[in-house]
Length: 254
Image 1: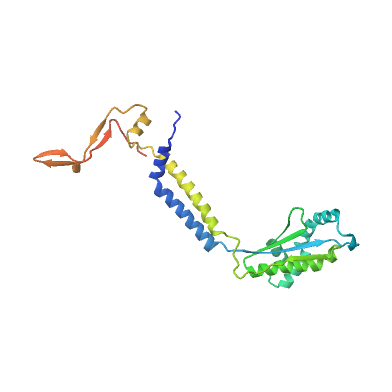
Image 2: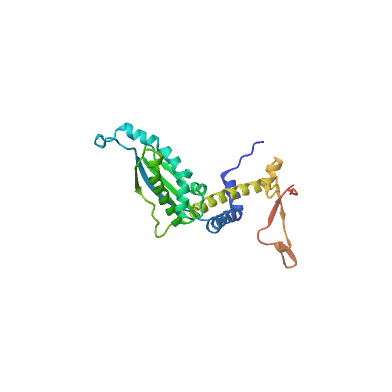
């Protein structure tokens, strides 16, 4: 038999398990905050830009579209050269930080915009000052070495990396992590609430009885406890609201 659930029933389940849902959401946010602020090591970025132009045999002739297209096409080659040991070994030696060329390459990201000759070098490091030094040193070394590697001697640094007075980490993002954790906690809480409700097979009221047995409830038997009965003039009478129990109601164990 296909069972449907109304919006009212959904609301009742959420209302019934509200403490559970709220607890899971708060716990998820707290865990995300602890992980973001205390466990994950913050990292900082430093960015620099440069542009490379091929030698022009006749400066008076200016640049044409083919020259620009050629420069764009070989930018990927420059990107590989920057991250090669030929460049990074010299960078490591100048920085004298104990980092190898392989370790420096892992911190570097080299990219360029679509159909753009401008190359962006981004360095990520746990030390913002070191990130700036790596970015600027790498571009300077590339500018010095590229003429001996390719027939290029026209590297212009557009914007060197600068250390700000109050550097902010790019990772982790505590607010974003906590917002994601809140959403995940809410979803997990609601899901768990409906799972518990689905697994709970106990009969609580007449509606449950009708649903389980598939027959209508004909009547209910009042359930009275000692406190519901007041003795007056030697006669015991019920007082207040008397609870009732459906005829034939039962409770499944487990």
